[in-house]
Image (cartoon, rainbow, N blue to C red; front, side, top):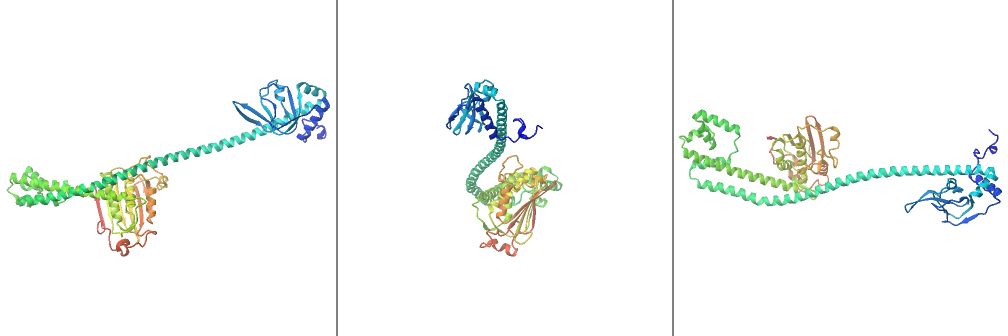
Length: 511
Protein backbone atom coordinates (compact mmCIF):
# COMPACT_ATOMS: atom_id res chain seq x y z
CA UNK A 1 0.00 0.00 0.00
CA UNK A 2 2.95 2.33 -0.33
CA UNK A 3 3.78 2.45 3.42
CA UNK A 4 2.53 5.07 5.84
CA UNK A 5 -0.22 7.52 4.92
CA UNK A 6 2.31 10.29 4.63
CA UNK A 7 4.02 8.48 1.74
CA UNK A 8 0.84 8.32 -0.29
CA UNK A 9 0.12 10.66 -3.17
CA UNK A 10 -1.58 13.85 -2.08
CA UNK A 11 -4.79 12.82 -3.89
CA UNK A 12 -4.99 9.63 -1.80
CA UNK A 13 -3.98 10.94 1.63
CA UNK A 14 -7.14 10.48 3.75
CA UNK A 15 -6.01 12.49 6.77
CA UNK A 16 -4.87 15.58 4.92
CA UNK A 17 -7.25 18.38 6.03
CA UNK A 18 -8.28 21.50 4.13
CA UNK A 19 -6.03 23.87 6.08
CA UNK A 20 -2.92 21.75 5.56
CA UNK A 21 -3.66 21.45 1.84
CA UNK A 22 -3.96 25.22 1.49
CA UNK A 23 -0.72 25.82 3.41
CA UNK A 24 1.20 23.35 1.22
CA UNK A 25 -0.30 24.86 -1.94
CA UNK A 26 0.62 28.44 -0.98
CA UNK A 27 4.12 27.36 0.07
CA UNK A 28 4.60 25.64 -3.32
CA UNK A 29 3.40 28.79 -5.11
CA UNK A 30 5.83 30.93 -3.12
CA UNK A 31 8.70 28.59 -4.04
CA UNK A 32 7.78 28.55 -7.69
CA UNK A 33 6.98 32.27 -8.16
CA UNK A 34 9.17 33.89 -5.54
CA UNK A 35 6.43 34.88 -3.09
CA UNK A 36 3.90 36.61 -5.42
CA UNK A 37 2.20 39.75 -4.01
CA UNK A 38 -0.96 39.49 -1.84
CA UNK A 39 -4.15 41.46 -2.52
CA UNK A 40 -6.42 42.75 0.24
CA UNK A 41 -10.03 43.79 -0.61
CA UNK A 42 -12.87 44.99 1.60
CA UNK A 43 -16.28 43.31 2.09
CA UNK A 44 -18.57 43.86 -0.90
CA UNK A 45 -15.75 44.07 -3.46
CA UNK A 46 -16.21 42.10 -6.68
CA UNK A 47 -13.24 39.87 -7.58
CA UNK A 48 -14.76 38.43 -10.76
CA UNK A 49 -17.61 40.05 -12.66
CA UNK A 50 -20.19 37.86 -14.41
CA UNK A 51 -19.79 37.94 -18.19
CA UNK A 52 -16.31 39.49 -18.19
CA UNK A 53 -13.15 37.83 -19.52
CA UNK A 54 -11.24 35.84 -16.93
CA UNK A 55 -7.51 36.56 -17.02
CA UNK A 56 -6.49 34.41 -14.07
CA UNK A 57 -7.50 32.93 -10.74
CA UNK A 58 -7.58 33.98 -7.08
CA UNK A 59 -6.16 31.92 -4.25
CA UNK A 60 -8.14 32.96 -1.15
CA UNK A 61 -5.91 33.14 1.91
CA UNK A 62 -8.29 34.73 4.43
CA UNK A 63 -11.98 35.75 4.42
CA UNK A 64 -15.09 34.52 2.60
CA UNK A 65 -16.42 35.06 -0.91
CA UNK A 66 -19.85 34.34 -2.36
CA UNK A 67 -20.73 33.03 -5.84
CA UNK A 68 -23.70 34.89 -7.36
CA UNK A 69 -25.64 34.36 -10.58
CA UNK A 70 -27.42 37.34 -12.15
CA UNK A 71 -30.50 36.66 -14.29
CA UNK A 72 -33.20 39.10 -15.48
CA UNK A 73 -32.43 41.79 -12.92
CA UNK A 74 -32.41 39.24 -10.14
CA UNK A 75 -29.48 37.66 -8.35
CA UNK A 76 -29.32 34.16 -6.92
CA UNK A 77 -26.70 32.92 -4.48
CA UNK A 78 -25.14 29.78 -5.95
CA UNK A 79 -22.61 29.07 -3.21
CA UNK A 80 -21.92 30.76 0.09
CA UNK A 81 -18.34 29.54 0.70
CA UNK A 82 -16.55 29.16 -2.61
CA UNK A 83 -13.34 27.53 -1.30
CA UNK A 84 -9.69 28.63 -1.73
CA UNK A 85 -9.61 28.67 -5.56
CA UNK A 86 -11.96 30.84 -7.65
CA UNK A 87 -12.00 31.46 -11.41
CA UNK A 88 -10.26 28.31 -12.54
CA UNK A 89 -13.31 26.78 -14.31
CA UNK A 90 -13.85 29.80 -16.54
CA UNK A 91 -10.13 30.12 -17.14
CA UNK A 92 -9.73 26.43 -18.10
CA UNK A 93 -12.61 26.62 -20.59
CA UNK A 94 -11.38 30.01 -21.84
CA UNK A 95 -14.82 31.50 -21.31
CA UNK A 96 -16.11 34.56 -19.63
CA UNK A 97 -16.99 34.38 -15.97
CA UNK A 98 -20.23 32.41 -15.47
CA UNK A 99 -20.71 33.76 -11.94
CA UNK A 100 -19.88 36.85 -9.97
CA UNK A 101 -17.40 36.41 -7.10
CA UNK A 102 -18.05 38.91 -4.32
CA UNK A 103 -16.28 39.27 -0.99
CA UNK A 104 -18.60 38.93 2.01
CA UNK A 105 -15.81 39.79 4.48
CA UNK A 106 -12.43 41.42 4.18
CA UNK A 107 -10.45 39.10 1.90
CA UNK A 108 -6.72 38.53 1.44
CA UNK A 109 -5.88 36.68 -1.78
CA UNK A 110 -3.14 35.88 -4.28
CA UNK A 111 -4.07 36.90 -7.82
CA UNK A 112 -2.48 34.64 -10.44
CA UNK A 113 -2.50 35.16 -14.17
CA UNK A 114 -2.63 32.28 -16.61
CA UNK A 115 1.10 32.70 -17.30
CA UNK A 116 2.01 32.65 -13.60
CA UNK A 117 -0.05 29.51 -13.05
CA UNK A 118 1.64 27.84 -16.05
CA UNK A 119 5.13 28.62 -14.72
CA UNK A 120 4.23 27.42 -11.23
CA UNK A 121 2.93 24.08 -12.57
CA UNK A 122 6.17 23.59 -14.50
CA UNK A 123 8.42 24.62 -11.58
CA UNK A 124 6.69 22.63 -8.83
CA UNK A 125 5.13 19.28 -9.89
CA UNK A 126 3.37 19.08 -6.48
CA UNK A 127 1.27 22.15 -7.32
CA UNK A 128 -0.80 20.21 -9.86
CA UNK A 129 -1.69 17.49 -7.38
CA UNK A 130 -2.44 19.99 -4.61
CA UNK A 131 -4.55 22.10 -6.94
CA UNK A 132 -6.49 19.01 -8.06
CA UNK A 133 -7.13 17.95 -4.44
CA UNK A 134 -8.28 21.46 -3.49
CA UNK A 135 -10.64 21.60 -6.47
CA UNK A 136 -12.04 18.11 -5.72
CA UNK A 137 -12.67 19.14 -2.10
CA UNK A 138 -14.34 22.35 -3.24
CA UNK A 139 -16.52 20.41 -5.72
CA UNK A 140 -17.50 17.91 -3.02
CA UNK A 141 -18.46 20.77 -0.69
CA UNK A 142 -20.57 22.37 -3.40
CA UNK A 143 -22.27 19.03 -4.16
CA UNK A 144 -23.10 18.51 -0.49
CA UNK A 145 -24.52 22.02 -0.22
CA UNK A 146 -26.48 21.50 -3.44
CA UNK A 147 -27.91 18.25 -2.06
CA UNK A 148 -28.89 19.93 1.21
CA UNK A 149 -30.46 22.75 -0.74
CA UNK A 150 -32.43 20.27 -2.86
CA UNK A 151 -33.59 18.51 0.30
CA UNK A 152 -34.79 21.83 1.69
CA UNK A 153 -36.51 22.59 -1.61
CA UNK A 154 -38.23 19.18 -1.56
CA UNK A 155 -39.35 19.70 2.04
CA UNK A 156 -40.62 23.17 1.18
CA UNK A 157 -42.45 21.79 -1.89
CA UNK A 158 -44.08 19.09 0.28
CA UNK A 159 -45.06 21.71 2.84
CA UNK A 160 -46.48 23.93 0.10
CA UNK A 161 -48.42 20.96 -1.32
CA UNK A 162 -49.88 20.26 2.13
CA UNK A 163 -50.79 23.92 2.58
CA UNK A 164 -52.29 23.95 -0.91
CA UNK A 165 -54.47 20.95 -0.05
CA UNK A 166 -55.46 22.59 3.24
CA UNK A 167 -56.31 25.80 1.39
CA UNK A 168 -58.34 23.81 -1.13
CA UNK A 169 -60.24 22.11 1.71
CA UNK A 170 -60.70 25.47 3.42
CA UNK A 171 -62.00 26.93 0.16
CA UNK A 172 -64.52 24.08 -0.23
CA UNK A 173 -65.62 24.56 3.40
CA UNK A 174 -65.89 28.30 2.83
CA UNK A 175 -68.00 27.77 -0.28
CA UNK A 176 -70.24 25.36 1.65
CA UNK A 177 -70.53 27.86 4.50
CA UNK A 178 -71.34 30.61 2.02
CA UNK A 179 -74.00 28.43 0.39
CA UNK A 180 -75.41 27.61 3.85
CA UNK A 181 -75.50 31.32 4.73
CA UNK A 182 -77.26 32.11 1.46
CA UNK A 183 -79.77 29.33 2.09
CA UNK A 184 -80.24 30.53 5.66
CA UNK A 185 -80.81 34.10 4.47
CA UNK A 186 -83.27 32.81 1.89
CA UNK A 187 -85.12 30.81 4.54
CA UNK A 188 -85.12 33.83 6.86
CA UNK A 189 -86.67 35.93 4.08
CA UNK A 190 -89.17 33.15 3.40
CA UNK A 191 -89.99 33.07 7.12
CA UNK A 192 -90.68 36.80 7.17
CA UNK A 193 -92.89 36.49 4.09
CA UNK A 194 -94.70 33.49 5.58
CA UNK A 195 -95.26 35.33 8.86
CA UNK A 196 -96.77 38.27 6.98
CA UNK A 197 -98.97 36.01 4.84
CA UNK A 198 -100.11 34.07 7.91
CA UNK A 199 -101.07 37.32 9.62
CA UNK A 200 -102.93 38.56 6.53
CA UNK A 201 -104.80 35.25 6.12
CA UNK A 202 -106.26 35.37 9.62
CA UNK A 203 -108.82 38.12 9.02
CA UNK A 204 -110.25 36.95 5.65
CA UNK A 205 -110.42 33.35 6.84
CA UNK A 206 -112.28 34.35 9.97
CA UNK A 207 -114.59 36.55 7.90
CA UNK A 208 -115.27 33.66 5.51
CA UNK A 209 -116.15 31.33 8.39
CA UNK A 210 -118.47 33.94 9.94
CA UNK A 211 -120.13 34.62 6.57
CA UNK A 212 -120.77 30.91 6.02
CA UNK A 213 -122.36 30.63 9.46
CA UNK A 214 -124.53 33.70 8.78
CA UNK A 215 -125.62 32.34 5.39
CA UNK A 216 -126.61 29.06 7.03
CA UNK A 217 -128.63 30.86 9.72
CA UNK A 218 -130.33 33.14 7.20
CA UNK A 219 -131.15 30.27 4.82
CA UNK A 220 -132.63 28.28 7.69
CA UNK A 221 -134.94 31.19 8.58
CA UNK A 222 -135.90 31.94 4.97
CA UNK A 223 -136.75 28.39 3.91
CA UNK A 224 -140.42 27.78 4.70
CA UNK A 225 -140.66 24.14 3.67
CA UNK A 226 -139.75 21.96 6.66
CA UNK A 227 -138.54 19.08 4.47
CA UNK A 228 -136.29 21.37 2.42
CA UNK A 229 -134.94 23.09 5.55
CA UNK A 230 -134.30 19.69 7.12
CA UNK A 231 -132.42 18.56 3.99
CA UNK A 232 -130.11 21.59 4.16
CA UNK A 233 -129.52 21.23 7.91
CA UNK A 234 -128.76 17.53 7.58
CA UNK A 235 -126.20 18.20 4.82
CA UNK A 236 -124.68 21.04 6.85
CA UNK A 237 -124.13 18.97 9.98
CA UNK A 238 -123.39 15.48 8.65
CA UNK A 239 -120.02 14.02 7.73
CA UNK A 240 -119.17 13.58 4.02
CA UNK A 241 -120.51 10.27 2.77
CA UNK A 242 -117.84 7.81 1.51
CA UNK A 243 -118.23 6.56 -2.06
CA UNK A 244 -118.84 3.01 -0.91
CA UNK A 245 -121.74 4.13 1.30
CA UNK A 246 -123.25 6.07 -1.61
CA UNK A 247 -123.12 2.99 -3.88
CA UNK A 248 -124.73 0.84 -1.17
CA UNK A 249 -127.53 3.41 -0.68
CA UNK A 250 -128.25 3.46 -4.44
CA UNK A 251 -128.52 -0.32 -4.57
CA UNK A 252 -130.89 -0.36 -1.60
CA UNK A 253 -133.11 2.35 -3.13
CA UNK A 254 -133.18 0.60 -6.50
CA UNK A 255 -134.23 -2.65 -4.82
CA UNK A 256 -137.04 -0.85 -2.92
CA UNK A 257 -138.42 1.37 -5.69
CA UNK A 258 -137.18 -0.35 -8.84
CA UNK A 259 -136.13 2.96 -10.43
CA UNK A 260 -132.40 3.64 -10.92
CA UNK A 261 -132.92 7.29 -12.01
CA UNK A 262 -135.04 7.95 -8.92
CA UNK A 263 -132.37 6.35 -6.73
CA UNK A 264 -129.73 8.63 -8.22
CA UNK A 265 -131.87 11.74 -7.57
CA UNK A 266 -132.63 10.68 -3.99
CA UNK A 267 -128.92 10.15 -3.20
CA UNK A 268 -128.14 13.53 -4.81
CA UNK A 269 -130.73 15.06 -2.47
CA UNK A 270 -129.07 13.42 0.55
CA UNK A 271 -131.80 10.85 1.00
CA UNK A 272 -129.89 7.61 1.55
CA UNK A 273 -132.12 5.84 4.06
CA UNK A 274 -134.88 3.64 2.54
CA UNK A 275 -137.39 4.44 5.30
CA UNK A 276 -136.71 8.17 4.92
CA UNK A 277 -137.24 7.89 1.17
CA UNK A 278 -140.50 5.98 1.67
CA UNK A 279 -141.79 8.78 3.92
CA UNK A 280 -141.28 11.26 1.07
CA UNK A 281 -143.43 9.30 -1.41
CA UNK A 282 -145.14 10.07 -3.67
CA UNK A 283 -142.07 11.69 -5.32
CA UNK A 284 -142.76 15.04 -6.86
CA UNK A 285 -140.24 16.32 -9.43
CA UNK A 286 -140.33 19.88 -8.09
CA UNK A 287 -139.90 18.75 -4.49
CA UNK A 288 -136.98 16.48 -5.41
CA UNK A 289 -135.34 19.42 -7.23
CA UNK A 290 -135.76 21.67 -4.16
CA UNK A 291 -134.46 18.92 -1.82
CA UNK A 292 -131.41 18.47 -4.08
CA UNK A 293 -130.77 22.23 -4.13
CA UNK A 294 -131.11 22.42 -0.32
CA UNK A 295 -128.76 19.46 0.14
CA UNK A 296 -126.18 21.03 -2.17
CA UNK A 297 -126.52 24.35 -0.34
CA UNK A 298 -125.91 22.65 3.02
CA UNK A 299 -123.00 20.65 1.59
CA UNK A 300 -121.44 23.81 0.15
CA UNK A 301 -121.77 25.70 3.44
CA UNK A 302 -120.32 22.73 5.32
CA UNK A 303 -117.37 22.61 2.89
CA UNK A 304 -116.79 26.34 3.32
CA UNK A 305 -116.70 25.91 7.10
CA UNK A 306 -114.41 22.88 6.88
CA UNK A 307 -112.03 24.63 4.47
CA UNK A 308 -112.00 27.76 6.63
CA UNK A 309 -111.19 25.71 9.70
CA UNK A 310 -108.41 23.93 7.84
CA UNK A 311 -106.88 27.22 6.68
CA UNK A 312 -107.10 28.50 10.25
CA UNK A 313 -105.36 25.38 11.56
CA UNK A 314 -102.66 25.61 8.89
CA UNK A 315 -102.03 29.28 9.64
CA UNK A 316 -101.77 28.55 13.36
CA UNK A 317 -99.40 25.65 12.70
CA UNK A 318 -97.29 27.87 10.46
CA UNK A 319 -97.19 30.60 13.07
CA UNK A 320 -96.14 28.07 15.70
CA UNK A 321 -93.36 26.86 13.39
CA UNK A 322 -92.19 30.40 12.72
CA UNK A 323 -92.07 31.12 16.44
CA UNK A 324 -89.27 28.54 16.67
CA UNK A 325 -85.58 29.43 16.78
CA UNK A 326 -83.10 30.57 19.37
CA UNK A 327 -85.44 33.26 20.64
CA UNK A 328 -88.27 30.83 21.29
CA UNK A 329 -88.68 30.54 25.09
CA UNK A 330 -89.41 27.42 27.11
CA UNK A 331 -93.04 27.38 28.23
CA UNK A 332 -95.01 25.11 30.52
CA UNK A 333 -97.96 22.86 29.68
CA UNK A 334 -96.89 22.00 26.11
CA UNK A 335 -98.77 19.19 24.38
CA UNK A 336 -96.25 17.03 22.55
CA UNK A 337 -99.04 15.38 20.56
CA UNK A 338 -100.29 18.84 19.62
CA UNK A 339 -96.89 19.80 18.18
CA UNK A 340 -96.82 16.51 16.25
CA UNK A 341 -100.27 17.20 14.82
CA UNK A 342 -99.23 20.75 13.89
CA UNK A 343 -96.25 19.36 12.01
CA UNK A 344 -98.36 16.77 10.15
CA UNK A 345 -100.85 19.48 9.24
CA UNK A 346 -98.06 21.78 8.03
CA UNK A 347 -96.59 19.16 5.66
CA UNK A 348 -99.98 17.81 4.60
CA UNK A 349 -99.23 18.65 0.97
CA UNK A 350 -96.34 16.13 1.12
CA UNK A 351 -98.67 13.47 2.56
CA UNK A 352 -101.42 13.66 -0.07
CA UNK A 353 -100.89 10.05 -1.21
CA UNK A 354 -99.31 8.76 1.99
CA UNK A 355 -100.88 6.60 4.68
CA UNK A 356 -100.40 7.96 8.18
CA UNK A 357 -101.22 5.77 11.16
CA UNK A 358 -101.29 7.54 14.52
CA UNK A 359 -100.89 5.80 17.86
CA UNK A 360 -101.50 8.44 20.55
CA UNK A 361 -101.55 7.51 24.23
CA UNK A 362 -102.27 9.90 27.11
CA UNK A 363 -98.96 11.57 27.98
CA UNK A 364 -98.08 14.40 30.40
CA UNK A 365 -97.66 17.91 29.14
CA UNK A 366 -94.04 19.08 29.27
CA UNK A 367 -91.93 22.21 29.59
CA UNK A 368 -90.64 22.85 26.07
CA UNK A 369 -90.17 25.20 23.13
CA UNK A 370 -93.17 24.36 20.89
CA UNK A 371 -91.81 25.89 17.68
CA UNK A 372 -88.48 24.02 17.67
CA UNK A 373 -90.23 20.76 18.64
CA UNK A 374 -92.55 21.15 15.68
CA UNK A 375 -89.45 21.77 13.57
CA UNK A 376 -88.06 18.40 14.71
CA UNK A 377 -91.23 16.50 13.75
CA UNK A 378 -91.40 18.36 10.42
CA UNK A 379 -87.85 17.32 9.58
CA UNK A 380 -88.45 13.69 10.56
CA UNK A 381 -91.65 13.40 8.51
CA UNK A 382 -90.23 15.08 5.39
CA UNK A 383 -87.09 12.95 5.63
CA UNK A 384 -89.28 9.83 5.75
CA UNK A 385 -91.22 10.97 2.67
CA UNK A 386 -87.95 11.75 0.84
CA UNK A 387 -86.61 8.29 1.68
CA UNK A 388 -89.71 6.18 1.04
CA UNK A 389 -91.52 8.19 -1.64
CA UNK A 390 -94.88 9.91 -1.83
CA UNK A 391 -96.78 6.66 -1.13
CA UNK A 392 -94.99 6.15 2.17
CA UNK A 393 -96.73 4.45 5.10
CA UNK A 394 -95.90 6.44 8.23
CA UNK A 395 -96.31 5.16 11.78
CA UNK A 396 -96.39 8.04 14.28
CA UNK A 397 -96.46 7.01 17.93
CA UNK A 398 -96.61 9.17 21.06
CA UNK A 399 -96.41 7.45 24.44
CA UNK A 400 -94.80 7.68 27.87
CA UNK A 401 -92.48 4.68 28.42
CA UNK A 402 -91.52 5.81 31.93
CA UNK A 403 -92.41 8.56 34.41
CA UNK A 404 -91.05 11.96 33.48
CA UNK A 405 -90.46 10.97 29.84
CA UNK A 406 -92.44 11.37 26.61
CA UNK A 407 -91.48 9.32 23.56
CA UNK A 408 -92.23 10.09 19.90
CA UNK A 409 -91.49 7.56 17.17
CA UNK A 410 -91.69 8.26 13.44
CA UNK A 411 -91.35 5.15 11.29
CA UNK A 412 -91.54 4.59 7.55
CA UNK A 413 -91.60 1.61 5.18
CA UNK A 414 -88.76 2.91 3.02
CA UNK A 415 -85.61 1.09 1.86
CA UNK A 416 -83.75 1.77 5.09
CA UNK A 417 -80.41 3.45 5.73
CA UNK A 418 -77.03 1.77 5.26
CA UNK A 419 -75.06 1.43 8.54
CA UNK A 420 -72.15 3.50 7.23
CA UNK A 421 -74.60 6.30 6.40
CA UNK A 422 -76.61 6.01 9.62
CA UNK A 423 -73.45 6.67 11.66
CA UNK A 424 -73.17 10.14 10.07
CA UNK A 425 -76.81 11.25 9.75
CA UNK A 426 -76.73 13.42 12.88
CA UNK A 427 -73.45 15.16 11.91
CA UNK A 428 -73.55 18.80 10.69
CA UNK A 429 -73.47 19.33 6.89
CA UNK A 430 -74.07 15.63 6.16
CA UNK A 431 -76.80 14.98 3.61
CA UNK A 432 -77.94 12.16 1.32
CA UNK A 433 -80.11 14.49 -0.79
CA UNK A 434 -77.46 15.71 -3.23
CA UNK A 435 -77.47 19.25 -1.86
CA UNK A 436 -81.23 19.75 -2.30
CA UNK A 437 -82.96 21.86 0.31
CA UNK A 438 -86.66 21.28 0.86
CA UNK A 439 -89.11 23.03 3.11
CA UNK A 440 -88.73 21.89 6.70
CA UNK A 441 -85.61 19.78 6.08
CA UNK A 442 -82.94 22.35 5.24
CA UNK A 443 -81.38 22.42 8.70
CA UNK A 444 -80.81 18.69 8.95
CA UNK A 445 -80.84 16.07 11.64
CA UNK A 446 -77.92 17.68 13.46
CA UNK A 447 -80.22 20.58 14.36
CA UNK A 448 -82.90 18.08 15.41
CA UNK A 449 -80.41 16.48 17.80
CA UNK A 450 -79.42 19.89 19.16
CA UNK A 451 -83.07 20.81 19.82
CA UNK A 452 -83.80 17.44 21.45
CA UNK A 453 -80.73 17.69 23.68
CA UNK A 454 -81.79 21.21 24.72
CA UNK A 455 -84.97 19.54 25.99
CA UNK A 456 -82.97 17.04 28.04
CA UNK A 457 -83.82 14.27 25.57
CA UNK A 458 -82.23 11.79 23.21
CA UNK A 459 -82.68 10.95 19.54
CA UNK A 460 -81.78 7.69 17.84
CA UNK A 461 -82.33 5.82 14.60
CA UNK A 462 -83.03 2.17 13.84
CA UNK A 463 -83.05 0.99 10.24
CA UNK A 464 -83.35 -2.20 8.22
CA UNK A 465 -84.37 -3.20 4.75
CA UNK A 466 -88.00 -2.86 5.80
CA UNK A 467 -87.90 0.76 6.92
CA UNK A 468 -86.49 3.28 9.34
CA UNK A 469 -87.72 4.46 12.74
CA UNK A 470 -86.45 7.57 14.49
CA UNK A 471 -87.13 7.66 18.23
CA UNK A 472 -87.11 10.85 20.29
CA UNK A 473 -87.41 10.73 24.08
CA UNK A 474 -88.07 14.05 25.84
CA UNK A 475 -87.84 14.96 29.51
CA UNK A 476 -91.01 16.36 31.06
CA UNK A 477 -88.90 19.10 32.62
CA UNK A 478 -85.49 19.82 31.04
CA UNK A 479 -82.72 20.23 33.69
CA UNK A 480 -82.28 23.95 33.01
CA UNK A 481 -86.03 24.57 33.16
CA UNK A 482 -87.37 21.95 35.58
CA UNK A 483 -89.61 23.04 38.41
CA UNK A 484 -91.07 25.99 36.54
CA UNK A 485 -94.26 27.46 37.89
CA UNK A 486 -97.23 25.44 36.76
CA UNK A 487 -95.09 23.03 34.79
CA UNK A 488 -97.36 20.36 33.40
CA UNK A 489 -100.42 22.11 34.86
CA UNK A 490 -100.72 19.20 37.26
CA UNK A 491 -100.90 16.82 34.35
CA UNK A 492 -97.56 15.06 34.50
CA UNK A 493 -97.22 14.82 38.26
CA UNK A 494 -99.92 12.22 38.82
CA UNK A 495 -100.13 10.93 35.24
CA UNK A 496 -103.89 11.37 35.15
CA UNK A 497 -104.39 13.86 32.35
CA UNK A 498 -103.82 13.38 28.64
CA UNK A 499 -102.78 16.02 26.14
CA UNK A 500 -106.10 16.77 24.54
CA UNK A 501 -105.60 14.72 21.36
CA UNK A 502 -107.62 11.57 21.36
CA UNK A 503 -108.67 11.57 25.03
CA UNK A 504 -107.45 8.06 25.81
CA UNK A 505 -105.37 5.59 23.88
CA UNK A 506 -106.28 6.13 20.26
CA UNK A 507 -105.37 4.82 16.83
CA UNK A 508 -106.47 6.64 13.72
CA UNK A 509 -105.51 6.17 10.09
CA UNK A 510 -105.75 8.64 7.24
CA UNK A 511 -105.11 8.10 3.54
